[in-house]
Image 1 (spheres, rainbow, N blue to C red):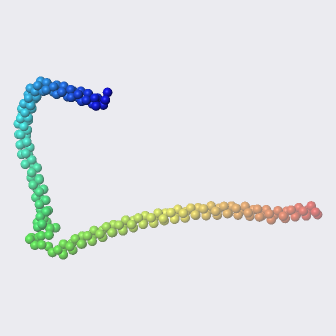
Image 2: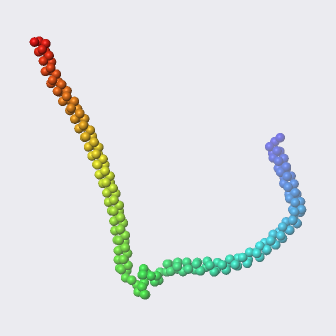
Image 3: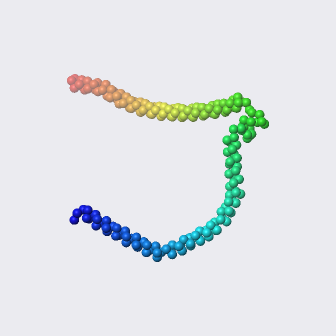
Length: 194
């Protein structure tokens, strides 16, 4: 069978299947159409009931927000507006305006410089104190090591002296025996020969 004949046969089968499916869809639409209309009316009725139930609750929530949250939000917005305002408002002893009079810029700069200098001095002093404490700790450790080494050397020196003394006694005894030994042999030799 040729390829073109096979394609025509497949196309004919496909068209027949599509026609069958379209007919089945029409039958189902006629059969289920009334149910779909009923479901649409039921959903619309339920939606209306839900809106009727929700509306009073939303009004209550709006009243609560208006009474509790809104004042807080208003305060926050006022504070933000004051921070953004290019004309500073009197806010205590730190503000640049005092009684409608501006403080001299030099005084503000001088005060800020003094505070910065004090902070830098404090940081440097703290760093110096920590270094001194660390150096003192290292010095104490070195002193302790010197004491330990000195004690070890003293112990070794005593042991060496003790060994030398005990060896010195042995050498003197050996020397005494060596000195007395030849005399006694000469005496013996003299007795034997005489």
